[in-house]
Image: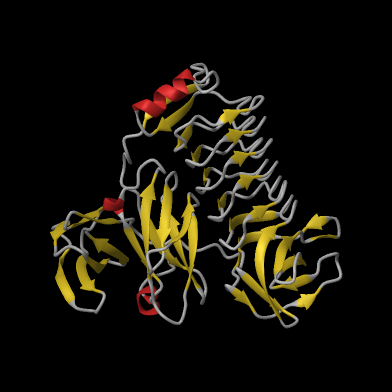
Length: 389
């Protein structure tokens, strides 16, 4: 497996140690600063002192922080909290419902972010000047504010939810790499000013012919010099997912770039929707399986559902070393497919109880097994855990 980045700042869901801070913030816990905004809630604050914002690397924000006898909910990210910082990846918990203006602006090394499910608005300059390449906005977001993604020249694909109603002036100005918009909004979002100034040749994927006609009839979305409108026909290729160790308390899902994914928890609840390259799962006292469904927002491909585990024994089988050979292991319609060079390797397939179902040299790379089961597939040094429908 690919080695996980060494500069990850991994935070547990509940932070148990803290200190009162003297740099203008109320609390410091595990390198993250907070301001108290109510008797029970805090907001993530800037780590700005000595003339610089000191946040860096990959940050997983916690849902709660315990300090001075109070178990605070982390409910917001303050304006400019990560402004001009050196963060590279940020995962935001669903306890956060508000992200302030310019919260991540000019964080030039930020390539990936997972937004919380309860977010209702993208604030002004929120991710302007960052290096994000793919982003999904969760259902519930109604507005993208002024200059929210301005100068994100690496932004290639964005997924817009059905709830979106308006896009503000310069929201995507000079996003020169923006080539794909997947819009689940049946009514064309209102465009104010010049949201796409400096952009060109953007393909907009829509749900059906009726929706496409609405966009064609809209004075802005119907601009053939800027937009090409298409009806989405589902995923064109099969995405892949790898699972990587990330310290003692986390496991990382390395997701195929360019797709969005719905991640469902063991009880079937929606834990996240993300287009980040990595998503981190906590390893708790009890093992759990998470189900990862590729999506375009317009179309969820449950036939390509992937399974991730927080079972410590299974995670131990996942090696940190770079593999000599990349293999693609997928399960569709009762058949496990193995793609790549398997010469000289053996295939072992186990169920979650450790029972061996298949053991042979890796010659037959399409293996039929009973469906509706979870299997652990080991081919050479490559290990995958998947749900076979």
